[in-house]
Length: 147
Ligand code: CUA
Image 1 (cartoon, rainbow, N blue to C red):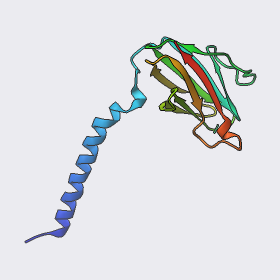
Image 2 (image 1 turned 135 degrees about the vertical axis):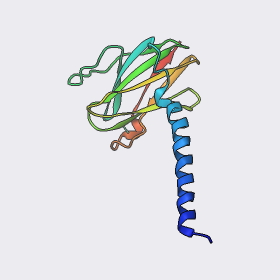
Image 3 (image 1 turned 60 degrees about the horizontal axis):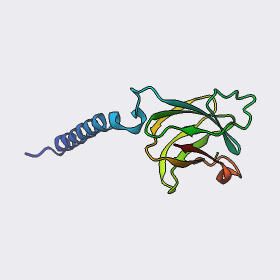
């Protein structure tokens, strides 16, 4: 005789097993772990604020962030962005010169997100804010070059 409760239990047990197996395979391959075992060739400090980004090769004093500096990064090497925010939560999205999103993280006040990436293609890259942060959100952009 069929027991519908037992069938239902087996169905959910099978479903749970599939989900756990898929998560344990895919989570370690998520982009958050990219280049975690390599020393970056360059470190860029980035502080977002309403409504621009300050970029510097030196650690940024969040009390007096200034205007930052021109950033040039080596092609084909791992670089690290240390991204934070001076005021509210912003996005930190890197686009190549074709307008394709390459890598991104969030710029959060009181926290530093480390984003490691390897830019194989030389050129100009743009940083845009991907988090609605106020009236001039759409004007938030910066750029750097890869040579
Ligand atoms: Cu900063 Cu949107």
